[in-house]
Length: 466
View (cartoon, rainbow, N blue to C red):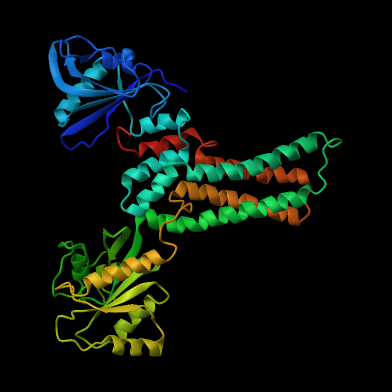
């Protein structure tokens, strides 16, 4: 599928830089750029005469007026990002220069590209499937090494390969069943139910694994959701500032300063933590503060990891115990904060108190948000704890996209229904309904059976020039 119109956009950041790139794609991209590209002698350069994947030196001119000295990269179809003729103009950085070149291209017939239109054309022209197209944006938005590695694996087609494998199993079974129903005299369905049951169990196992891994995929993409909890004035916001190494949260001696959640990301090695600083959990008649406390409790529920902060200068009280009850069964760590002052809490004492109530069995550190004492040890612990389990990255498939996960859930529903039909001894001709539904649901992941409005919605969130 090739388009009549030729598109262009600034492919680099809108901020001024040393170099900017303007990308042009379409059947007439060589023609349009050739109209404004000149050599040192003031003669037009025909890009049609240039070899593909070469860089040409010259000047972008509006007739006799030189706009900029540039390098022009030529990539002829089908060996380009969009599988169309693509030209990339590398000009000097600066929004004004880029805008002048872009306006000159428009004057000569080029259309401004819509957000994500280059990648959309790559998908529609068959260069990449929909899962790979979505991974392009994931690569751009990667916040950690783990997320980047996973996005690159998806871009290389790891999801597509798995989905094609599963769809081929379904397709072969559907084709055989349809053929047998059309020609029962020559094609027997004896033993077909047992074969379909074996295939269905395999499909169900593989799809279940992908769905289960999607939670780790979410963690890889968005970071480990880490709630910071404790009573008012124990140093939660000070801790956030300490680990971020900047004054991000307001800190005062007045209890209840934080009334809403404050969220920030931080990388520790290759691990991304999504930190949520919460309101102090306690009893209060303040309606606004109660809203913040309720949000704090919700943050605990959705957290992958919880950092509980206790004030080491005060004895453990019922409010502290209540908070430890809230974080029960969550992975996490306890910080005995304010260890730079005279303390009354010890790790041994807290452990003994907790052991009696069996509320918590996580690690515990002496810590000072004021001086940073214990920060390096805490960061090393967080890294080790987050990397040792399934959160760490390997060559497995991690679904990070909600749309893809929903398609897998629909597929699983159809496969489970198929297995139930087999177990209930239903006629074979009913199997094809669930198998076809499963086949089409898997197709939505790679874009084989996806509606146009869904495609448009996916690409509209892309950045301009990509």
